[in-house]
Length: 214
Image 1 (cartoon, helix red, strand yellow):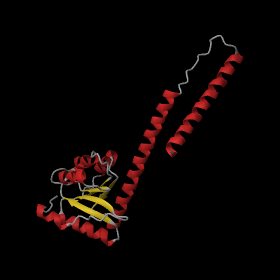
Image 2 (cartoon, rainbow, N blue to C red):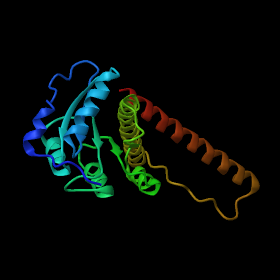
Image 3 (cartoon, rainbow, N blue to C red):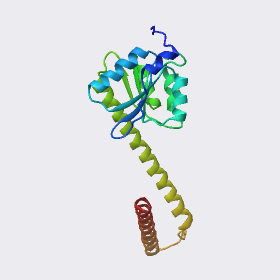
Image 4 (tube, rainbow, N blue to C red):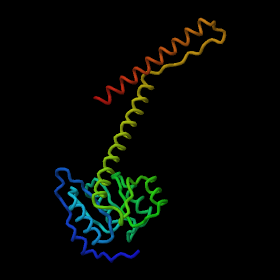
């Protein structure tokens, strides 16, 4: 597939938005063709999508932008001059910013699409079939899903930390039952173990509630 050569002096034709107040989402558009980038910007504006779009023509330029500017989502073509296919996906998925990545490409291979999603891409859109409204929705949904993922990961880490603290501060040694214990002693032993387990579980729940709320 051939793209028009994108000269460096063409990139400023897409003016970077600096007003990110209100509902605007800051999108890093990684697209080798400046004309395609302009059409996409116009299409999104035409359907009332509130996006602030910054355009770069290659993976390296995009990764550099992420180092110095804040964005909400990456909209990524996979046929770049310095990276292509899944390698382009991996470059942005591995970035410390952990931004959601939506692919917008001419590639239609379902195997590659499935693998990209498995690696962490939020959505895969084909250029010839994706309407501006669909692209806008995909970007917003991708950001919402990534925020939920990060929130759940944070909650899980806090729960594991609480569990570790409870284990350290309230150890419950298990006293073995004497092998010659009577039936009554065995019953008492089982009841005591159950009572201790319930108490420990209640303590954990109380700690989780207080730490999450607090």
